[in-house]
Image (spheres, rainbow, N blue to C red):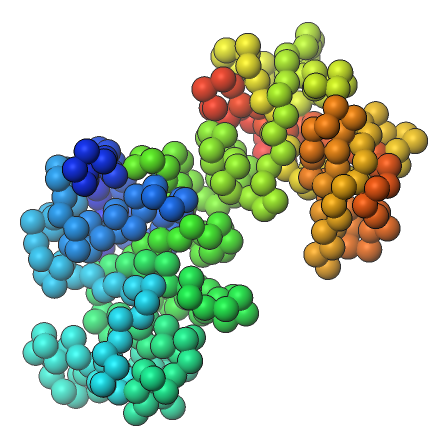
Length: 365
């Protein structure tokens, strides 16, 4: 297994700077997810590591080898694409063996690797079929198996689940996690889907406009977003954001005034705040609970109720028109149009300054 090091890597298409002097260290055996919106540069970065895109400047190392001058076949990588890229005239067995035969691997070794990969992904019964006889999920598993047989130093996966239906996406995601636990091959996975990132990654690299916004474990990213962009991109539903002004506090944590005049004590140390002229309060839905409107200090009107089984999300309009998403139990009795109270867990709130930098409770909830 090998780690990956990117040093001041840049890529531009004409006047458009897609990746700008990006540096990143990936440890051997890690499952890293590049997460970000369309156009942020995540697939371009993956293709640069694979050798499918040239590097304008900077260096890429896999293990101790510098690979950016090398062709794709000399880099020790295996890549799985969004659209499978299987040869339609070949059987599954032939698709899996094709790259190994081109590399001159002995026939008995090809058979061993093919059988092992087929058993690992439960596609042994499909080895003599052609891609046209397979479902989308089966084809994606074949594409993953074709990568496994190469026994690469590095797996690269470019949105491999995006063409699958919801149920199959969940199953394949689980299979990928189990596969990585068995093989422990360094893996880089590109997605715009935060659920895939949160459930698969050892660490997430959040990308935006050609640069890294934050690197961290899934829960680091969720609980302590470095920027307002990260906070809004990661988490479902999207984090509630409210303009806030700082109020006097005597216990060392920030107290803020909301647009409706109510005040909330956060767990954010005031000493950590820089410019407080423009603050934004961030509250996850699970930190805003539906409460009795008679006793709650913060009240509003339910506009939309989303029943998700294990929990209910209630979109609440405050008296000034501000919308908040709050959480209630799965058996919630709230209906659209009801007056509701809101119980806010201020100690779990985030504050973002005018530059969008996040400030968080001293201890994450």
